[in-house]
Image (cartoon, rainbow, N blue to C red):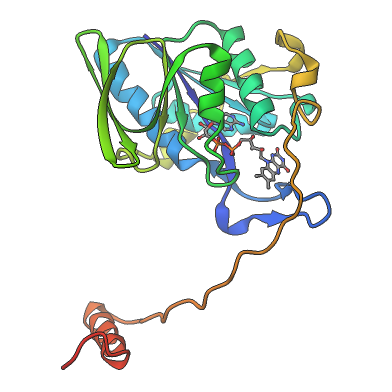
Length: 262
Ligand SMILES: Cc1cc2nc3c(=O)[nH]c(=O)nc-3n(C[C@H](O)[C@H](O)[C@H](O)COP(=O)(O)OP(=O)(O)OC[C@H]3O[C@@H](n4cnc5c(N)ncnc54)[C@H](O)[C@@H]3O)c2cc1C
């Protein structure tokens, strides 16, 4: 089977700032990481590859420097990686992002299974996976919590509004995976270092069969009208010391607030 895992490089969330004029995220100079749910998606691909055989390709749309994240995926076990990168893609909303990713995927080959995270920790719209499936004209299962491969089909546990359900699907299919769906084996420093020179393919706008009106700012109908700081809540007390002192501290607070009695 041929697997494609879409990963997004996101700012480490505590460091995000918004530009008050353009209403865009200020990404320059912020430390980045791979969106957590995307690592859960890659983990499922690695597990399924053990059973079905095949190849895992990872792809991201972002700056050339996103190659660093692709190499982290190599350290986890991915086979090939692509960065879809061009100034022409800058300012993309989810519609333009998913179209660009779809054209990127089509330029690489045909995939049986496409993985995305269910949502990111920065944009957080949860739209890219479903839109990508639509652009690739394949079926999709969202909110995926677990996947097993049996007798040529995939048995998938997914969240729904009532709890959970099991669906059985066949390839080609897109799965969007919820954060913490499985345990991610984070590569060690030496595993990451071993991939530091590994080759990452860079795809530019000129490499794609693309409608220039559907990419970047031109292809993005979303307008951020206004931004505001979220309400700030007073943080709870920090209790220092060993576990006994911490436990006693919690009991004192609960007693003081009348949640428990002596
Ligand atoms: C207020 C606001 C301001 C923004 N400002 C900027 C900005 O200044 N500059 C800018 O570049 N973007 C900006 N964006 C973000 C841009 O719209 C999103 O990065 C992009 O469209 C993806 O949307 P999302 O993060 O909601 O993805 P979701 O739909 O939540 O992502 C679901 C999954 O899709 C996949 N995916 C998403 N994006 C990518 C990607 N790029 N490559 C590979 N896989 C991907 C991942 O697997 C991810 O887990 C902004 C978004 C908002 C809401």
